[in-house]
Image 1 (tube, one colour):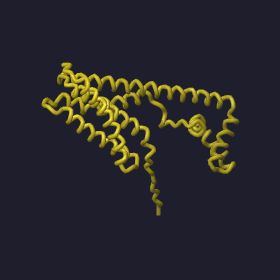
Image 2 (cartoon, rainbow, N blue to C red):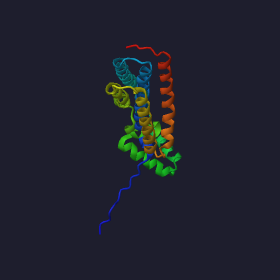
Image 3 (tube, rainbow, N blue to C red):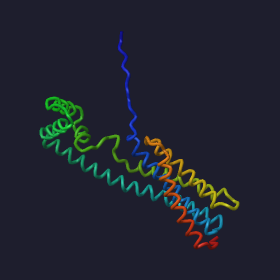
Image 4 (tube, rainbow, N blue to C red):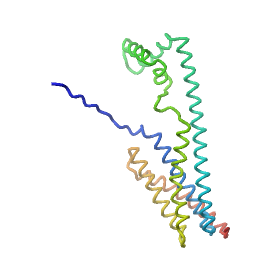
Length: 235
């Protein structure tokens, strides 16, 4: 009878660390910074059109700033990776035997017997010598390669999603109490973001929510105080 082979695959939490960090950071930044900006203008008793314009300006400026910062940062990482690739490619061309021995030594240090380590190194070298050295010697994995444009777009998108709720409130809310609604909705959304982020990372969620609430409350309190101190009708 044929033997059935069941493929077992574990989903490790650390695999989500990169995109989760970027997404949560962008959304939190958008919600806190834009929400606090709109709140400050509201407590300063600015005209509704001025509050909305401030929120829109904060959204656009923040999203572009996030994109630019992420692009520059990840581009620097990509430049370093490309330099390492050039160095490793030249070493493989000039000293192939020494590089094979270096790869063998890496596998020995990881627990393989010398003969098996040599065999593994030879087989991986025959398959894709550059990829083997980049992965096991330098630590560069193809799935984790720096992608500046992708990172910039993701950061800008996450920031925009976080900044949209306060901007929409400034646009749609016509009656009194905008400041109260902004604070309440922002804190609820921040708590949800923090809770979901920690849950996806494998935690309970409560600590994540409390951390985000703490810093979000401080930011909102500071900007609300500034708006109140300089509370003049700027509309």
